[in-house]
Image (tube, rainbow, N blue to C red; front, side, top):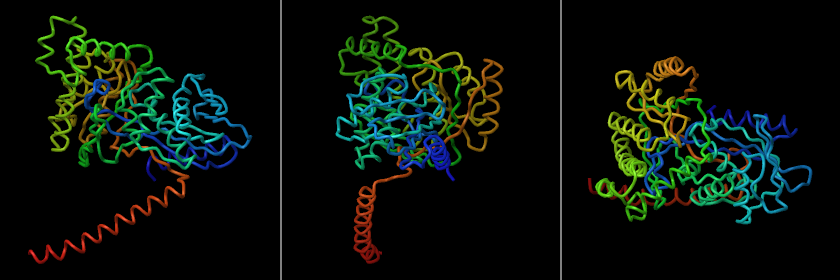
Amino acid sequence: MTYLQKLASDTANLFAKTYGRPPRWIVAAPGRVNLIGEHTDYNDGYVLPTAIERYAVMAADKSTDGKNVVQIRDVSGAEPALIDLSIPVKPGTPKWSNYPRGVVAGCLERNMNPGGMDVLLNSTVPLGSGLSSSASLEVCTATLIEAATGRTIVPVEKALLCQKAEHEFAGVPCGIMDQFISAMGRQNNLLLLDCRSRETQLVPMNDPAVSLLIVNSNVKHELANGEYAQRRAQCEAAVKILGVPSLRDATPEALENAKGRMDDVIFRRARHVISEIERTVHAAEGIRASNWPTVGQLMYASHRSLRDDYEVSCKELDVIVEIAEGLGIKGGVFGCRMTGGGFGGCTVALVQTELVESISTKIGTDYKKKTGIDASIFVTRPAGGATIVKGKVAVESDLVDSVLGYLDAKVQEVRAAVFPLRLAWD
């Protein structure tokens, strides 16, 4: 049984205990870790995330009380969200409910009304960790409404709907990366996302000798506190001075020439973004070539830039990276960097799989000695994106089956036509 299968089974059992009946639908959406490409998404740059094996899972059924209300309870015991569908959906309380509220509102605008539902949320994506607990919740909500209404949203549109929900209901001006990877992740692949064109390229990471080690500093941050918006405004100020559409269009030379026309803080913010975009493209090339030492060095350079130029790291994250760098390649670590919005959260390290246990022990022990905090550490492989675990609509399944059948028939036709020719040529 996979991690997701067990989590879904546990959530179904908890739903039955909570509501007194089994769920009709179970859906899941993963969190993500960004290997490299931090604070580039809202600057039209590139990012290189992967979905991780930590999920927001929702089990649900139609409500039995006849009310047109979506009731979302959380296994943690947090105050439930009550979303009344009979009136316009607006931001409300509790605060966490604004993420699914915004998604429900977006779906209603598309005439996707799920009706009253009883929902149980069970998320294993750590809150405030930089692993996109908010995006996984949003995408999970959208996927549940797809299951409940029998309609699907094109993955790109689903991601944009969820991004809009975070902007308008949660008040966080996030980029598009988090929702994209949660909706569109592919197992054993990273996703190189061009945040301007929204084009994606799969970057295979099939080498079992290499894994991603996530270290949660257990120092929590909240992006809505203004720091995120401040960094975004500083990037926009640099764009105005440089006279370019976005920092994606700026070069290191152009930035250096404009240094005298901007203050030091704006200069350093722009320098991070411009160099980080370049590092991200090179990292994707390195992964495709399985050049792990080069990818690792790019990760260390990214962390230094985030620490010194963008100033979104913190003491605890720096300590983890220093411990990892001290282990070095001989100790099984190719590279390590902070990941996510910053001001706490997690680091991601590219490590040798066979040494995961010893690396985890060393980092955990030394981190506790230096900070007095216990780190939470887990290893992951690139995971798949949002999925309906239970309750897929029959019409949708029939359509998929017919399409797959058609494609398989076409493949057989091509084989029949091509293989004899190849034999003749031989």
